Length: 290
Ligand code: R5P
Image 1 (cartoon, protein in one colour):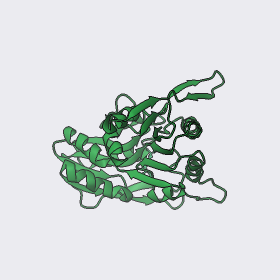
Image 2: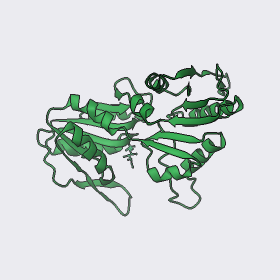
Image 3: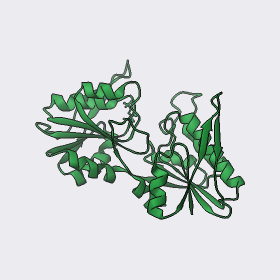
Image 4: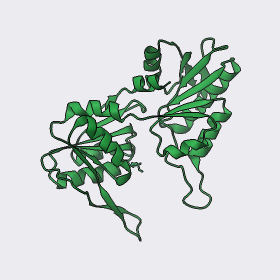
């Protein structure tokens, strides 16, 4: 098996090739003056199974095009099977049609991966597992929460793990099993007129003097975490850590999180993180699943 590291492999290609003791080919990559991408795979893959590693964090469309170029080229070069590791799956949150005429973007993205010659796909924590049905091949889904919990354990003395909404409760439970302490989730209510959500409370929580760990799948604008951190401090928390699998931090989220007292942000290397984010390397977990 040969590992091919794409321009957005973010070091996960090195980790995977190390853990699997496989040859690593690093893609040659440049951007032409007009913004178009150039890709070259510098080595032979003829009659070999290939694992191509390429995340699709911002700029998502560029990262996706690079992945399509890589897959098609590997097929042209005679690879027998192309397996893609896409640690962060772009468009994962656009997985349903709320208004008539809206694109189900992740459906198009997953179908295009199949068209480009990818026959099996590994993704870390997609937004909803059901959306992976749109990929026309075998799918593996990686959960990063045990790895994240091992890191979080180093940063807390009296933890309480809090999910920012009910759908994230199972994540909080998994983290609490390793970190210790209790876990719960925040209850939200939606204003029928404005559509805005606000926090109603959290069942069975005593956050007084606790090191509160917030856990979610994604931190994007930080809005969800900011609300949850404010809630935790209003209930007497001693400290708050914001953690997630994919830490995008768009629209000044890092500073906004600091402003509400979030002491640390913990994420994984599915994304090229801001240097202040404590980054958990999940390459080994991904490699062992292949
Ligand atoms: C929502 O369903 C997700 O699980 C996240 O809570 C959300 O996408 C985070 O986005 P933001 O950081 O912009 O609040």
